[in-house]
Structures are given as structure tokens and as C-alpha cells.
Amino acid sequence: MSVELLPDGRKRIRAPLSDEDVRQLQAGDVVLVSGVVYAARDAAHKRMIELLDAGEPLPFDPAGQIVYYVGPTPEKPGHVIGSAGPTTASRMDRYTPRLLELGVKGMIGKGGRGPTVREALKRHTAVYMAALGGGGALAALQIRAQRVIAFEDLGPEAVRELEVEDLPVWVVNDCEGRDFYEQAVAPWRKEELLPEEFRLGAPR
Amino acid sequence: MGQVREVDAAEITRAVRELCMEINYKVPEDMAAAIRRAREKEESPIGRQILDLLIRNQELAAQGEYPYCQDTGYTVVFIDVGQDVHIVGADLTDAINEGVRSGYRDAYLRASIVADPVFERRNTGDNTPAFIHTRIVPGDQIRIQVDAKGGGSENKGRHAMLKPSDGLEGVKSFVLRTVAEAGPDACPPGIIGVGIGGNFEYAAILAKRALMRKVGQPHPDPRVAELEAELFEKCNALGIGPQSLGGTQTVLAVHVETMATHIASLPVAVNIECHAHRTGTRVI
Ligand code: SF4
Image 1 (spheres, rainbow over the protein chains, first blue to last red):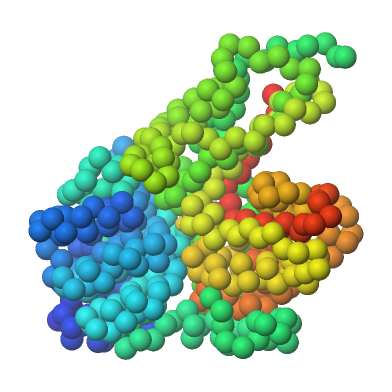
Image 2: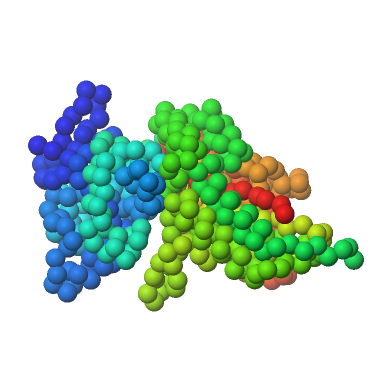
């Protein structure tokens, strides 16, 4: 069991995650991520897909794993890592369904996902979570170890194995198609102050 | 004509280097104050929690161990060179880039620039080149403002060549749509820089320059200031809130700059700054 319910209602997760684990995570849940996550962002995703197209394996076994969209700053002497907050997830939308097919169960980034990824999350029982965008210094404190495991030449975009402890995230898109951003924003819209064209639905 | 004053390019390098090293760890006081004001005004509990976290992130970064954000940005340099200045010792562009290179290296900042946009996208390894806007102005001083501009918020900027008949309402709607579509991706709450008028490229530069103003300082023209106030209220009425998790504080300020334009045109550009607003100025 990789999902632990804490007394304050938050949930602690640790990869590898099973379908059963993912089904316990709902849009809006506050989750603490512990254990191993794999850091990969734009250039690393492009290379991973090229590897797959060439029939090669990924730099890590994706089954049940969590991918963190992050490119950290270089660590100062004596530190494990530099600043390490999330980057915009939608830039990875093009690559994500392929990784979900291979068994990746969770992703951490910031910002919304497109309809194709949301559908793929349902189809493959996976979850997308957001960490504090721009909270890079705070995130660094939750990271216990880092190791570059592939594409070192990409510098900040290399694939890293990170060991994290209680990295706080929100579940944005769960495996049942819910979207926390939509739910969260709607009650705060002041329709009466907005021009006509902004009143119906929430353009995002 | 005044006396020609010689300025050693090494002084420019030093100023740029020091600014890069400082701003990535220490948010300017006007921005810190704007975040604190937003914390006071925010009505949504989750929004207040987020703003508290951002304040903690600021305090932690200011201790100098971890940059405020891992995206230490495009290095944008606004340099106003007095026309009575003679720069000696090195090429101005090289002097600026050398400041970026050494500042980013020695302050453990991320190299986030690729050498070409669509071919190999190879990281230059030292965050150069800087994106430089030079003006020749009266006087014998050099004013340098450096901005570390996050890519996530930069990506959410928009530009449009509206029709004159779209008028002020068209401009407002374009700004609101841009902020609404940016949503969580631009790490709200931030600053909205709007450039209206000029031509295709001037509108964008106006929008970026608008972000360089002290946060929340109104435009001196009362008509523009009124537009800023209205856009501020409407952007916040979108309900996006901190991190787009709902709330009343979506933007900390809207800054508008305008200029003359063509009888056929109404250019508008919106440049979004995230809560990681990192800028500083030196005068030589
Ligand atoms: S948009 Fe700004 S705050 Fe967010 S990750 Fe990028 S630089 Fe940091």
C-alpha cells in the first residue's frame, strides 16, 4: 500500500503506485510525496521518446513511478540540490500519453493539462499533481538526494533520480477526470465585474 | 555638449554580475510589500496559505542558499547610456554578457538559454546571451536595470494588432483573455505589463518596460492610471487567485504604457510577470 492517510486529512504517497493507490487520490487532495521521483523536463522528454522510437528502454523503469517536471539550479557546496520547484506541465502534454502507456502513474508539475492528457489519465489510471509554482527554495528543502541518471549533457534538463521527503503537492487531475483548478476558481469569479464574453464558463 | 566621461566596460560587467547575483536571491522590497498586501486582502483560505508559503520562500531565498525560483530566467538588461559617456576597454555587449556569465556561475544560478530556438537547442551553459535593450539618453551616466524573467510567465504573453475600431474595450478584453488563459501556468499572483500603441515591436517592448516600474506605481497620465485600476479590478474578478487555486488576488498590479501609433493600427502586447519578480538597478 503506497498511500497513507494522515490524521490531518493529507495523504502521503510513495512510488511505485498501483491502480488501487491512484484511485485513492482525488482532485483537491493535499498530498505529501516521499521516496523516489524522476526529474525530467522538456529536452529529456524529447530524448526519452526518441529512445522509445528507436526501440531502446527508458533510463528508468517507469512502472508505477512518478515523474517530476523540474530543472534545478546547481547545488551550492554542502547542499544536495539547488532550487527545485516545478515547471509548466502542459509543455510535456505531447509526450505524456506514451509514458502513461508504459506504466508511469504520477506526474508533478505546475499548471493545467490538455484534454488528451486528461483522457489518458483516465484510461491508464494515473494522476497529475501540482507543486508550489515558483516555490523553488522551499522545494529544495524536501529533497534528500539527487543523482543524474541520463542525458548529462542537457545540464539542468538531465534526467535525475531524486529522493524526496514530504514534498507537498495538490492533486489537480485525478483518474476520474476531475480538474481541481476548475473547481477551485469557479466560486471566486465575480461575474458581475466581468465583460459579457467572460461570464459563461471559465476560459482558461 | 558636456565633457565626455570615460567609463571602463569592467564597471558595467561588475554591475551586471552583482545584480544577477543579488536579485535571484532577494526579491525587491516593493514586490515583497505587494505580496504582503495581497496576503492581507486575500479572501480565500487556500489563497492565504499559498501567499504565506510565498513569503516563506522569499525569506528562505534571502538567506542566500537557494535562489527564489529554480528558473533563474532570461537575463533582460535595460541599459540607458548617457550620450556624454565613452565606454572603453571592451565591447558593451560583451561586457554585459561577461557579467551574466560570471554572476550566474558564481551564484549557482541555472543556465536556461539554448543557442538556437529550433535546430539543436543546445544549452549555452552560462545563461548568455542576455536580452539587451539599449537607449542613448542625455547626460553622462549609465543606468542599468537587470531583470531575471521566468520562462513560464514569459510564455503566457500575447501580442495582437487590433483594429482602431476595437478601441479601449477591445484592449481590455484582450488583456483579460490573456490573464485568464495564462491561469496557473504564469505562477500568479504577478504583474501584468501592457503596451498599447507603437508598432509591432514597440508594443512588446512597452509591455516589458511596464513591468520594470515599481510595483503598483500608477502611470502619471490619469487616463492611463484609470485604465490600470479598472484592469486590476477585472483581472482579480477572474477568481484565479494565488497558484490558480481560487481567490481574489490574481494580479498584484497592472502597469500600462502607451505611445503614438499609425492611423491604421492598434497594437497591444501583454507581458506577464510571475510572483518571482526579480529586478534591480545600478547607476554608474
Ligand atoms: S513562472 Fe516564474 S515563479 Fe513560476 S516557475 Fe517560472 S520563473 Fe518561477
